[in-house]
Length: 232
Image 1 (cartoon, rainbow, N blue to C red):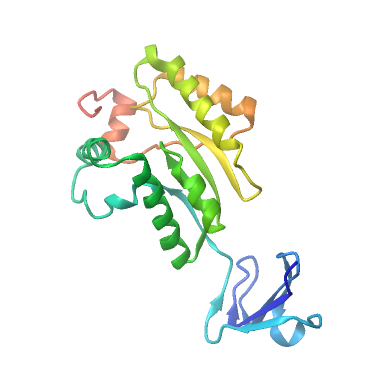
Image 2 (cartoon, rainbow, N blue to C red):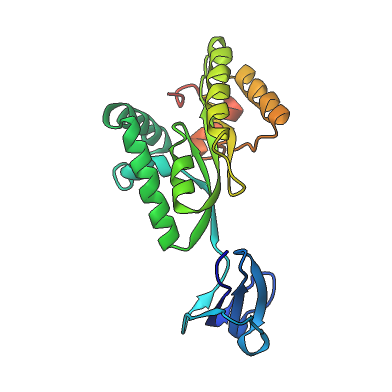
């Protein structure tokens, strides 16, 4: 058990209520918020540590609902391209430049940057699952959506089996803050049978699901009209 802590600042922004001038947040011994309100109106138990954040705004942590922590190394490297060219270059660069340990390093660095920006919760969609360890180490919250990819229907069963094995291994490390989910990657990388089997698996195992959709005009033309020249 830790000491209760009273955090005060020029403004507290509860989000669900108006801003509070000269506000404070009391965190109890259990690490949970015990009170929020004007600093003068909050009583605190004896032994409470008081932290004055000065002329700042205190608000809940931000949420990044879709990120790729494992790919942090590529920031700025693949710019000014069409979506099709970008994704093809990205796939090629991953295969040529990265090893397993690189994904873990990139995920850790992404967590550092998110925390510096006030992001405390993230939806991490990725193939390696490296964000799971990074989020746990950083004390963040989030869901790690493990990707399934196989555009050829003949490979659907094998892709599902690989996904299930990886998810089972990752779920052994789940906590009340960090969960594991699945992601049938995108319409141009996942066959109809694989989409269906991943959906059935997610429902049966109560797994969160994420997907890439509507990322560009060419993407939409592929899905609605079968523009095959888009597909990798």
